Length: 107
Image 1 (cartoon, rainbow, N blue to C red):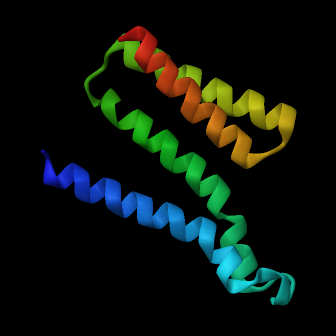
Image 2 (cartoon, rainbow, N blue to C red):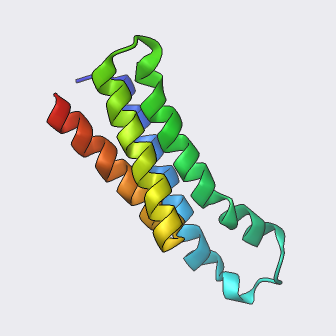
């Protein structure tokens, strides 16, 4: 087992949980509109998309057409879903699913 990979996966999981739990724990409905917490939480959606994009682009340091195609499919899924649904959450999920499915199908 690679302990570095496990550590990164655990840290990513904790950060992911914190981004989803923070609005519930902090009760943002009681916060003043336009406050620092609201601005911070509204930036987490685009940050999640950017993180997924960077994570999928990192393997391209050594170019492989199959990996590039999977990244392009994931980006297209994000853009189409966001354009149609207007939801950062759905766009992120669609992009992650499309990228993962493309990697699995392309081998």
